[in-house]
Image 1 (tube, one colour):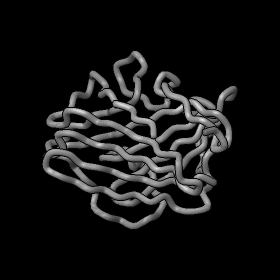
Image 2 (cartoon, rainbow, N blue to C red; image 1 turned 180 degrees about the vertical axis):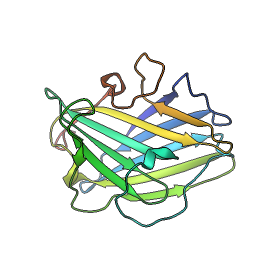
Image 3 (cartoon, rainbow, N blue to C red; image 1 turned 30 degrees about the vertical axis):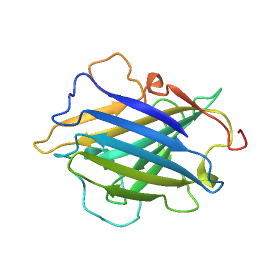
Length: 181
């Protein structure tokens, strides 16, 4: 299991959230297991259940994201996962270029457990839908709080006035191929 503390983009400070941490568990042969833990979640805005279907613009409220960019190329995949159980996956030819839906054999599974002090969001993505090579990894979260504050959390951010999870600087970790130990 790999644990990644996320940092908030300095231009979008949170209201009550004090920390966000993402974990990846690649031990299951059929599912990639992901967990985000949000500390200070008393004012967290959680979209209501809406069913396990693809949807666009999930980032407009609380959602969680995984980016995988195979080494040596420009293409990358983005997974958007919502507490509403809605999800989407996109493939890009390069930085924000050539966006199209990325096929998955099964729907990801998304589960939100909100609490007053902290909240847990778990997601499972079918391993058959992941690149089978070494990848650069980006983990991020858009955390909306009551009153409209939105924090943009990632392993790392690019220098800039606006958060951009697609920026190569955000792909700050490595994700081994499925056959790697």
